[in-house]
Length: 137
Image 1: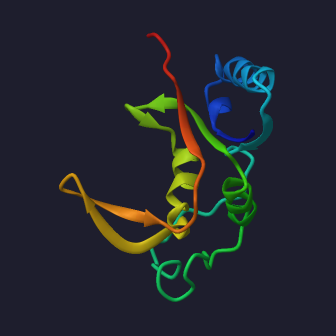
Image 2 (image 1 turned 135 degrees about the vertical axis):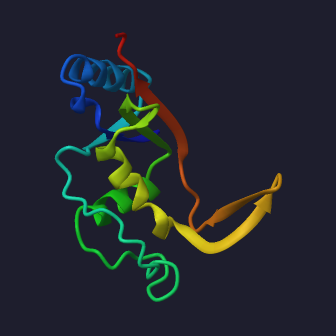
Image 3 (image 1 turned 120 degrees about the horizontal axis):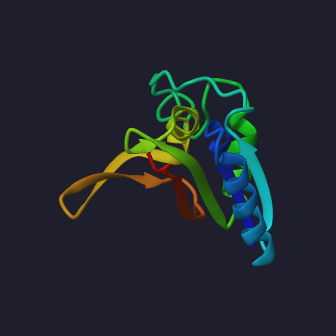
């Protein structure tokens, strides 16, 4: 099984590296071939919301940065792990910058499911596992 770990755990200076090491160790022991992308090191420009990936260049973002490699790794994976410190009840800004750029992976048409609007996926995407690191105060 191929696992892609997109992590921002190092943003938590106190527990991040230790948590990331434990996560990667567990995945390896379970037989996963692991690729790690650290959001703190990735050159990712925030999404501008231009909509080109939906209409003008379907499935392709016009911004050229490290996301092209992340897209390739994502669609080749069986499992996507998003690992982040929790900030204000959500994932941290470094991970949000990457997740916001996932838009080209969706078809720009909505479907309605359980009275909610959802994008339809453009590709068969991997299973998702979210890991949130919450510190005690």
